Length: 370
Ligand SMILES: Cc1cc2nc3c(=O)[nH]c(=O)nc-3n(C[C@H](O)[C@H](O)[C@H](O)COP(=O)(O)OP(=O)(O)OC[C@H]3O[C@@H](n4cnc5c(N)ncnc54)[C@H](O)[C@@H]3O)c2cc1C
Image (cartoon, rainbow, N blue to C red; front, side, top):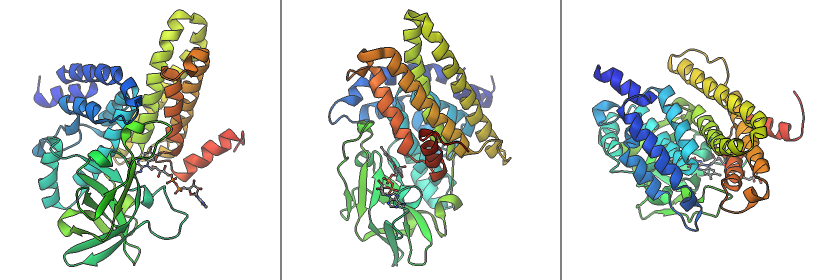
C-alpha cells in the first residue's frame, strides 16, 4: 500500500496503528478506577498515550509528527474519551496548546518546540479561559501584559490550567493596556510563576487542574505564539477548534453506553432505552465529522458548533443518568462506573462552555421552549 494511504487508514482505524490504538483503548479503560483514588495523577495514563504514539497527532511530519485530518483527530478523541475521559481531557488541553503552536506564524518557535512536543520531551497545556469563558463579568483582565525590553511582563492569575503541575510550558494569554491580547508560552519552572494546588473537584481530579499565577514574569518575544492583536483567541485559532469539546462529550456518552450495553445483555427490557441513546450518539458523531470536514474545506457547516455542543451535552447527561437509574442503588455506591459517569457528565456543563450553550442548558432545565 502507498505510505500515505496506509497512514490515513491507520488514523481511521483499519491499519496496524489502529491495533495499537485499540490496545491503548483497553489499557486506558482498565486503569480508570485508579484515577479516582486520593491524589491520583494522570501521569501513568499519559505515559500509555506516549507509548502509543498519540503525542505525534496533528504535528506536521517535518517536525516528527503524524499528519492526520482534523476529522480523524476528532474521531480519535471520541474513542479516547469513551475509554478514559481524564486521559482524553488532559490530551485535549495539551493538543489545544500544540495546535496553536502549529498554527503560529512564528517559524523559529515552531522549529524549536514542535519536534520536542512530538517526541514528548516537553509537556504543555493551555490556560486561556480567562480570555473566553471565565471571569468575563469582572470588567478587567485577569492577566495583564506590559512591554518590557525585547518581550513582555505577565501579571495576574490564570484561573484554570489542567495538568499544570506536570507541564513544562503553559500556553496562556494576557491583555495589554490598549486592549490587544497575546498568547505566549510561560515556563512553569520560572521562579516568578506559582502553580496553584489543584482544588478538589466533583470529578476528573486526576486531571490536576489548578491555577497559574505569573508575577512580573518576563516572556521573551521568542515565546510569543500569537499577537498582540485584538481578540487573539479568534484571530489565532488552530486545529480542530471548538468541536473537540463536543467529541469528548459524545465519547464520554459512548463509554457510558458501552457499560449500559452490559446491563442490557442481562436485562433485555432495557434495550428500548439503550438503543435510541446509541442511535443519538451515532448521529451526533456524524454531525461532528460533517462539521469538521466542512470547516477544514472552508465551507460553512450545516450545523453550528454551539448547536452540536448542546446536543452532545444533553446526550451525555441523559445517558449517564439512564445508566445510573438502570444500575439502581448498586450504581450509587462509590466505585461503580455509573456514579462516576454521572459526576463526569456534569463536567460538560462547565468546561469550555460558550454562553449560548450554557443558556440553552439552563432553559432546558427550566423546561422553557424557544
Ligand atoms: C475541571 C476543569 C478543568 C478546566 N481546564 C481548563 C484548562 O485546562 N484550560 C482552560 O483554559 N480552561 C479550563 N477550564 C475552564 C473552563 O473552560 C471555564 O472557563 C470555566 O469552567 C468557567 O467557570 P468560572 O467559574 O471560571 O466562570 P466565571 O464566569 O468566572 O464564574 C465564576 C463565578 O463568578 C460569578 N459570576 C459569573 N458570571 C457573573 C456575572 N455575569 N455577574 C456576576 N457574577 C458572575 C458566579 O458566582 C460564578 O460562580 C477548566 C474548567 C474545569 C471545571
